[in-house]
Image (cartoon, rainbow, N blue to C red):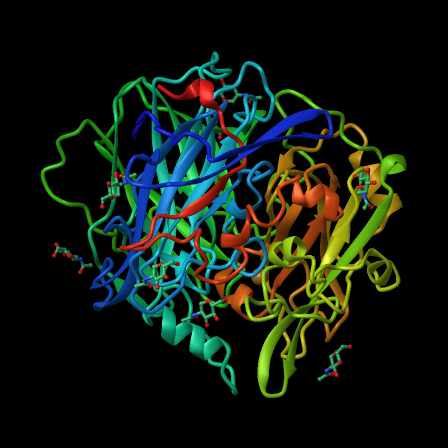
Length: 598
Ligand SMILES: *[C@@H]1O[C@H](CO)[C@@H](O)[C@H](O)[C@H]1NC(C)=O
Ligand SMILES: *[C@@H]1O[C@H](CO)[C@@H](O)[C@H](O)[C@H]1NC(C)=O
Ligand SMILES: *[C@@H]1O[C@H](CO)[C@@H](O)[C@H](O)[C@H]1NC(C)=O
Ligand SMILES: *[C@@H]1O[C@H](CO)[C@@H](O)[C@H](O)[C@H]1NC(C)=O
Ligand SMILES: *[C@@H]1O[C@H](CO)[C@@H](O)[C@H](O)[C@H]1NC(C)=O
Ligand SMILES: *[C@@H]1O[C@H](CO)[C@@H](O)[C@H](O)[C@H]1NC(C)=O
Ligand SMILES: *[C@@H]1O[C@H](CO)[C@@H](O)[C@H](O)[C@H]1NC(C)=O
Ligand SMILES: CC(=O)N[C@H]1CO[C@H](CO)[C@@H](O)[C@@H]1O
Ligand SMILES: [Cu+2]
């Protein structure tokens, strides 16, 4: 937690422009020794042992994994300085769940919105959190739950941490205290080995998750192995009500979760938006998803400790992990995993919360089918290509190696290399094959259908699909091929929730090669110009190509009136916007809230 006053240099240049109806301003300046960032995160690598794992190279943030908790308040612009202390690797940080509508270079997507931070350099991320962001314009709502993680390669397996945005307004739900459950996977191989294997000919799988970590600790079973390591302990007091914030920071595991002796959990938030209360005895959290739920602690618990049980679903083997809910604070001995799991979690693999979760407040009308201006179907398929196993979307894989330079850089340089053509896209189902990007115009209302298909290798996987930028309305999922008319009937009487990560489930485990095996559909209004990624959040799948880039808005919309030479330092890898030991970063402050400065 931190709340440092921010000092800014006198502007070297102050530009003001009219953008749509809002006035945006920018300021080019040098963040020298007089500039104090609101927070600092340092990404480093150390040879450590996580849980029961043998020592290996693990990326850390400020020396730990997960990294430190960041707490921000809405209605402010923050500058977060990220140091890449890795001697040989690039890094970036993505602010998962926030829309970087104001600061286009701050979304943290390498080769999409920025050049990555070179080894031993640092980058100042500008994070503007508009008022109303907490709970999505819900006037009476408070904190939202996001998390930060690297967007390079496999780094987010450990280079990640919680980030919570607070609102000063009244809280729509009453609770006494908050607790965080931050979920991660750990693998027996290090990141470099895993990345090499996934891109090798022939393909080498990473292996399944060896342990599900809860707040950095954990033990349990995976496949045939037993991990007997000490568990995380979450202390509670009788009779109190707790708001648990659960963050799906896993690399791979789609986690089902329940708490022994506490089977009335009330979901109140999904991916940063408050929901109407929804009672459940268990939760399912895909990679990239976040939920808040209320837990009413027992008045007279029959025992002191209760197991929290976590199990991966839709994988060939079940990775099972534990944490402990402890009444009081005085646990004499560190707890270890139980010899036999105390609970039998539901086998459910599809449909959790679909069509039943409701927003707490309908802040913005849900676009009707008649208002949809274009439907784009993204068909994901696994293929074996030239000895490599890859994932393709509408026949194209996308990885950090796909574009020669970040799309946003091409756009500013106006060299056209990677700027997508709407014309080419419209004749190719929405994807411009030259730039491998999906363009959209401001004002469009898109229906995006993600279609799972049977793979060449056999088998169908579950994929948590995450969208950067503004949240979408999730309109459900189902088996086979999406049928718009049928789904419209299912939507009658429902009220779709705004999300940023929802599951493309496994409805059919034996679908034959390239036949439709299930779908997930979203509606969204194209309002925020930017380069936004939509991708599966499973890190292995991202490395294998399961990512797409969407470019919202034309050149005029995207440039925001900030021309070269102001952004020069952003346009080359290792440009002047990157600081190092001998060089202060030369940045563009896209939104300067001078009145906030103290
Ligand atoms: C991270 O570590 C740096 C020093 O290494 C420290 O200045 C900074 O406050 C830490 N950040 C957080 C969020 O704790
Ligand atoms: C770092 O990023 C640059 C620019 O994308 C790329 O050329 C370089 O190969 C990357 N370095 C590593 C070690 O991946
Ligand atoms: C796990 O380790 C703890 C501490 O060393 C020990 O007390 C416990 O018996 C072990 N459990 C199993 C199943 O081996
Ligand atoms: C949900 O659970 C809470 C307490 O756990 C209870 O007060 C409430 O009545 C339940 N709501 C429904 C609709 O069952
Ligand atoms: C870009 O789109 C905006 C609407 O979003 C429109 O007003 C403007 O004329 C367009 N500019 C170009 C160069 O097409
Ligand atoms: C699987 O389907 C794809 C796409 O239709 C096709 O290119 C490929 O040849 C098929 N593979 C096999 C083994 O049938
Ligand atoms: C530090 O940055 C400056 C300006 O970009 C560059 O000229 C210099 O080579 C960098 N130093 C190192 C050690 O990379
Ligand atoms: C207090 C409360 O709501 N208790 C309910 C918890 O859930 C079980 C079934 O899941 C009900 O039987 C209890 O009444
Ligand atoms: Cu996936």
